[in-house]
Amino acid sequence: LLERGVPWGQLDEQADFSRTGTDSSPRGLIFMYVAATRNALVRKLSAATNLKHADVERLSVLCAETIDVGPGRDLILEGDPVGSVHLILEGMAFRYKLLPDGTRSIVALMVPGDFCDLDGAILGRMDHSIATADRSVIVRVSGDMIDSLIDNYPRLTRALWWCSLVDEATLREWLVNVGRRSVAKRMAHLFCELHRRLSAVGLVEAGSFRLPLTQSHLSDILGASNVHTNRTLQGLRRRRLIAFERSVMTIPDPKMLEAFVEFDANYLHLHEAEHDAVFF
Amino acid sequence: LLERGVPWGQLDEQADFSRTGTDSSPRGLIFMYVAATRNALVRKLSAATNLKHADVERLSVLCAETIDVGPGRDLILEGDPVGSVHLILEGMAFRYKLLPDGTRSIVALMVPGDFCDLDGAILGRMDHSIATADRSVIVRVSGDMIDSLIDNYPRLTRALWWCSLVDEATLREWLVNVGRRSVAKRMAHLFCELHRRLSAVGLVEAGSFRLPLTQSHLSDILGASNVHTNRTLQGLRRRRLIAFERSVMTIPDPKMLEAFVEFDANYLHLHEAEHDAVFF
DNA sequence: CGCGAACTTGATATTTGTCAACTAAGGTGG
DNA sequence: CCACCTTAGTTGACAAATATCAAGTTCGCG
Image 1 (cartoon, rainbow over the protein chains, first blue to last red):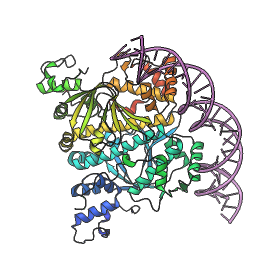
Image 2: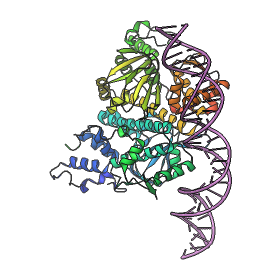
Image 3: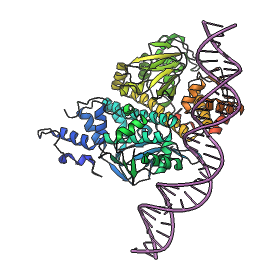
Image 4: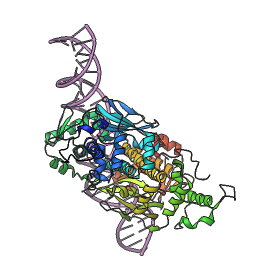
């Protein structure tokens, strides 16, 4: 759905009308349609809040400058001041903290449509680091733009705030996960979550999605040792709850996996409200 | 510092000038001074962002209606729609989730100056429950007020957003804590955090603060069993790192406790910026 | 003075971590 | 195209951390 490296600003004339079924739309609506189709962020926000034409246009304008980053690269480090905000367009990134003994703890995964350091921009300084897990296409938005957005676009501000609150809700669920579930269930829960989140942005096909994480990444997400993560993964494979190789995760029966952990997706706040303002 | 049940709006004439050392302040400044002294929220926000006179006044107006709640009472339950927002004035509350098997996981502690369900107000529905840990005085702000605030007070909106981002940062640190530290260190880390947070709102006296949590609460925060929590607590007591009885926590040597867990308070974002706009 | 909740203790079971070796896969220079 | 090298993944044996179970004991309060 997202074509690698094509800035949305240039996509106006490539609109696919199969969904609107009309060619009499004013240019602005075409733009919005393209943006909404191509941009996981706009899609996410539209599902949750009632954005108006001007909001979506403004949001799309933000996304002029994209950068292409290889896998395993730090985007920003703990302690850095934050001047600009990054938004994942393609690929995957993660938030992490290093303990004094060198142990790593991964505290969030970011998929297309997610902001990386919106929090840092408001708080002023990063209290954690961010790195890519995969080759990624990322939009850089200047801090000034965020500031002016807060001053002039209350609906958009609310939408971005909404984003950071969904991140927070996810963090709460991860905390429950690590605090109160066995490693096998933690792992299954993580995979259920990713399945849902990636489905929501159209990145799951036939139960499969790209998951560019090593077992070491998984360990640092789940708070487990590498050895135990390895054995747990094998356990889930043996039960045919998942298949995972070469960075491709396949969940043959999502219902079964969700039943295994009694997964409740409410915390992801997907499809929270029916949107009505984006296309009309 | 906070006198039980006295709405701040009525405190104008009770101002204590010991800190300003002047009696020529215009009435507005007196009001702001009182609000900033009495209201942990205003204090917190002022430390982080540059609020103007009108912002502080607006913030104080929000706090007209207070309610008094006993300990161990649910304020709001998972799944509830959120119509109004609660702010802790006095006491302590916590966020929690219940797993299908009845296990509880506590995912946040709220102290005076913290919002309870600002997240629910923006997201629309609670994805977790909130209960008091102690008898508490709580301000109820209507959702409409929050809405109009977002539309008309961008600086305040940013300040409230800032609050929710600090909550998020705290959640990340809790996740690291539970995922990567032994129970003893988790516990020490929690106590370090509370010491800092309560100090910031003036609730620590001579190394002691009220901590109305049972060992069962602690277990559900730390992701440990009751028995293990009990033994770990005894271990910290034996090493004279803490004293904790009758809901009073005493930390004889905070430096020593912080050294024990290599505590780094950056994530709390206290004293982030020097404020200049509140008193002048 | 008695009752329930909170706390404490010992014995034992389970989960998970650590260590040390080994195998497989992908990438690189000759 | 192969030899090498590095990283990721795998395995078994063992140790440590933590949970569970089943009794107590103490504390606060009516």
